[in-house]
Length: 119
Image 1 (cartoon, rainbow, N blue to C red):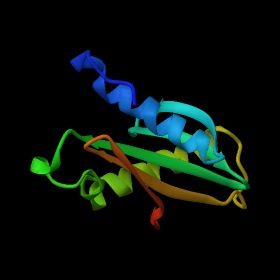
Image 2 (cartoon, helix red, strand yellow; image 1 turned 30 degrees about the vertical axis):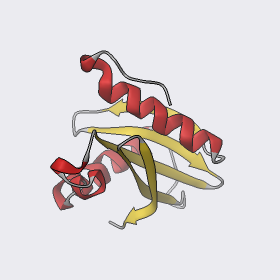
Image 3 (cartoon, helix red, strand yellow; image 1 turned 90 degrees about the vertical axis):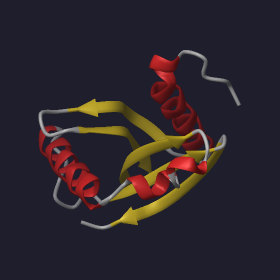
Image 4 (cartoon, rainbow, N blue to C red; image 1 turned 180 degrees about the vertical axis):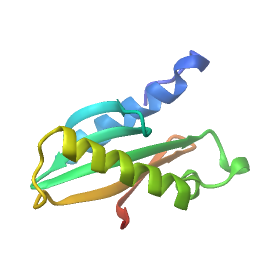
């Protein structure tokens, strides 16, 4: 694993690690750090027919808890609104299957939760 040495870029470094991980598992990354007036989502990928919105959370160690737990209900709702905006602005049909995944990185280990929550 590549070491992230610049503190200001640590989030970007771990998002890149997550993107590489997903690519190795067959997903195709469409967007990184997609931002709109509502909020942002770290990664947007295709997994077969699914459009996947991915939130990446990093913790150096467990003293601040599990990174997966940081995607609380409020964050989930924001991700849902960003996803709706993305679908609307990218002319996706109402039949486009979507899911929300979360990647947690703790102590350098990647945990991937597919279909982490429903909206």
